[in-house]
Length: 234
Image (cartoon, rainbow, N blue to C red; front, side):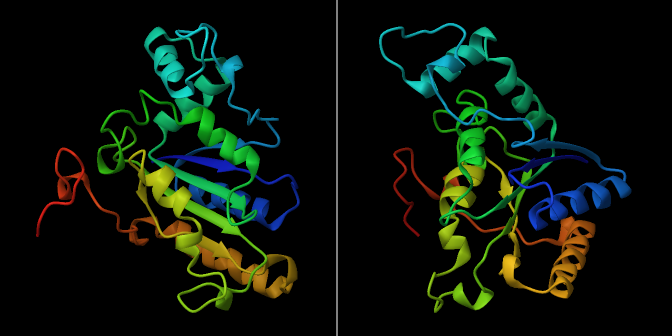
């Protein structure tokens, strides 16, 4: 299959980067086609602004999503956005590789999401969740963080990791149609031993060799709601 890795870490020698490199090696070894968008190496511009539009439909007031649709219709997306969008549409499977910053993604990755998940292609109208523009594709988050695993969960001080990542897993990836797989997590990475890091790499290799067996997160589907998006009576 075609695999796109969106990688967002400022340090090329980081453990997050080692996970990304492991993914490339393992997936190519399985004869998958792999492309990598290394956002820091690309000096990716994360700022969504009026400068993203070569021509404007509304000159006096910027509605970013509406201008995205206008740019799609007129084929006037700028080259950096169009290039990433082409990769995204090419991919069957997208891996998001990043360290968790403040219960979220690094700003550079948030900017990729804002600018590349284009209205009119990835979503729009009632084209969201299981009917989103990227339906049929799969996405997996591979993340690292400083916290220990016991800190996350129903009784953990931070709560469940999937709750923490809900804006990404549900509000972004599932919203545009991805089947979202359970995240792969490197816990407490800055503080663990090299043996533990090696075990994480081994575990990740096993995950990558068995992608078809990774559980998919469960989210509601639109057929559970009426035309006004009220839940159907059970």
